[in-house]
Image 1: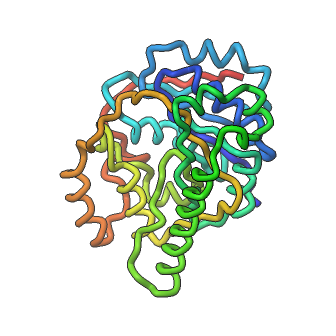
Image 2: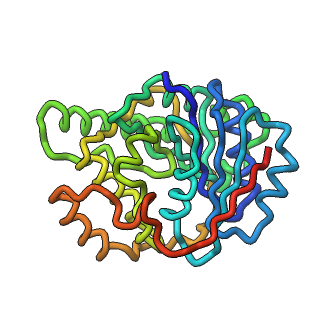
Length: 285
């Protein structure tokens, strides 16, 4: 079992959704040591809204913010990684809820040199999302709204990830799967420091998670999916800044060739941030 867990939530407006995610974290059977809200330039008053609810939470909350200069998720995540006090980092998107032992599963299966990746979240429809209640989140019981078909699809993704892990370990194929899914990732801070975090040259939607995953595998840090019963759920909402097509494919393909040759550290990462942004940090509770 891991020691201190830091949960990192990437934030951009939609404070109503964020409050549901925080309530879901509070309902976990294993609580994090701290939650870091890393903001990519929200216009909404995130700090004020969370402060109004701060007495509900049994963990420290810090708010880290950068200016809104477009979609800069990689940089926002690095901002939080730099100040994280936990030994183990769990990335948790602001539109994600989870079943009761979700964080416990990360904690129970912690290993240095391995990152843990749950299956893609159950993607709730607009109607299912509207049916989510505060009581449902507090009890971590979503059986009233999640369908049998959604659970079957979830299980298929778990089995596929098991296959990828066994293929990499025993058949010795040079695989990079299961892939990193940035908003539902668990990794030792030591391991993400080894590859220097996210590459901040990924600006605009897409490919920052694939890049991190490729570098982790090249550094010998491999992924596993151990989520037999627990799973995340994605709340429906219109897109934020994301587009339907990655704008980073040319850069990603260039880096892919370099990573294959052994260059697994970020070009502009934790130790060498891109730009000279002023990053503000506020303690909420």
